[in-house]
Image (cartoon, rainbow, N blue to C red; front, side, top):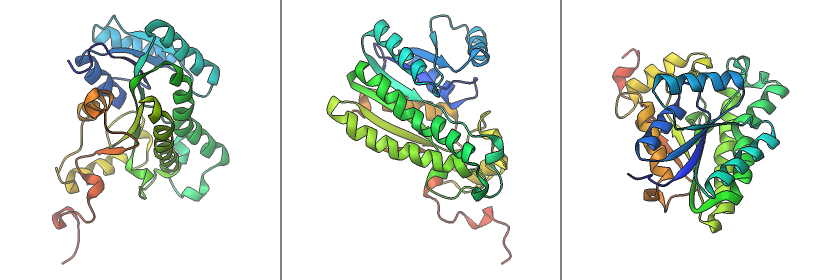
Length: 266
């Protein structure tokens, strides 16, 4: 097993359709000792129901509201006291008010911009700082991003800006933590039918477009993203850091797709 003896934490599991759950399953299947975090009691109830549904009784849950530095610090202090060292941290956190994910980007509110940036981008910095004293020499930090950080994706709006900040933070954190032996990477996942994604106006059309024009002619699955994250957490990726790796069936590399995918007059 690639992750046997490795200990770490995943932040952001919502339900069994979430990318974070796919990552959890991939790491668990490879023998990792995983702690999950929850933001509040409502989210805790949801994760506990998942444990019951899948007959899981050996995974610890810790509260961690990433808008509160004290809870972030206490989370990693608890992990450090339990394990001594942490081998991986997986950041699967993003939030923007639904009203900010439609229409013109210039209508983004000041409050909405700040909230999206704090939860979706700055939280990676805050988490990395809290985790740093406890990270092992070969530890890995992995976060999730999306193509809307690089290109215009209709209705992604402020989340695209937040994800761009996340990707830039990935590079700077990789430089800061590299001398310690810690790697920091991000996965740019294609659209997946998750609870968070359904908050984006026109999301189902995004799925259809990827299925029609990506080189693999399909959408990616959470287990494929999970396996990529597991690879980045494992020693197999020991020479990879400061990268944004696309797991999107090749969609990010398509300029103009096959002509049959479009309704065009000849």
